[in-house]
Length: 382
Figure 1 (cartoon, one colour):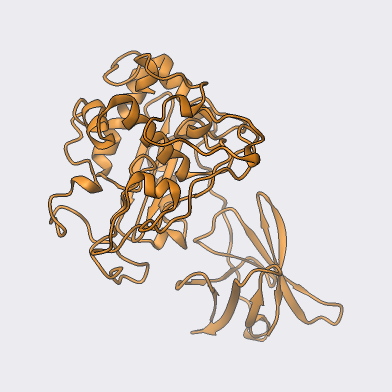
Figure 2: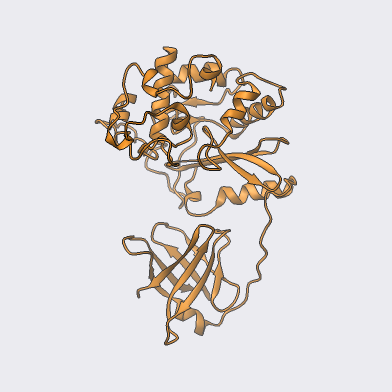
């Protein structure tokens, strides 16, 4: 957006008009339709590669062009068209790596140098840098990555050479808040150290769907509109919410992947919103727990399987007088709470409701999950 504001980039032109060191290989999948920068930044370009896995210490690190082509030593596939651009949303960190190369080719600078001079230095983000700028493999200022069980991931952290998608970005909540606050102030024309109010409003404008803007997701919470984005690397998680008007905001970073399995950052955000009086942001649902006899609970114990074609299973077991729920995709077991003899809930899952079902003979045959985007049954198999 800084390049747009400076007249060096037209958001609506073909990305290949700006790429010099590499060209995007259009094929029949894109239906001869060219990709523009708005589509790259709003995840509507129809591109592959959702995110990146990182590299352990000692592994060779690929160049940006090797990443885009999926060439060794890159551990991710090539960034290519998977459907016609401009037709629907599909998150693509790979698309942002194309934007990174565009920035390099337009400015003639490394991406990290350009972003540092354009954003970090003007805002005093002195504890923010990219992976390639780390001075040593065990920099004492960098957090160690941990699994949800508290164990380290095998090395202090993984290396991520992918910068524009945020994978290789190191920062602190305070530093990142400086960036968010600058955007909020710029919209009020109280500070324009990076972008004008008009450029930021364009950046916050959703494309095709109601939520995906240029680099941000937009959510309506009560009477206020919020920008939002979360992040996940091996052993790290992050999240932020900030109101477009009014100055509300929270930035959360943790050196654990625990939030992969429970809504940790969401619970923290909702707590902040409640304490600081963000009107309409979060309205808690109050539930009353009841005691269910063991004779009923024991019938629920067993193994359950998700939809056909998925390997994901659930095991429900009895321990210390309580039922516990363990998803095969998670090492964490959740304590089950009952609203009545069939309906149960978790503290870790806010929006879904769950209810055991029985067959015509009165035998437990599964449970229903009711979510905002639909309902489905998980069948009991053992």
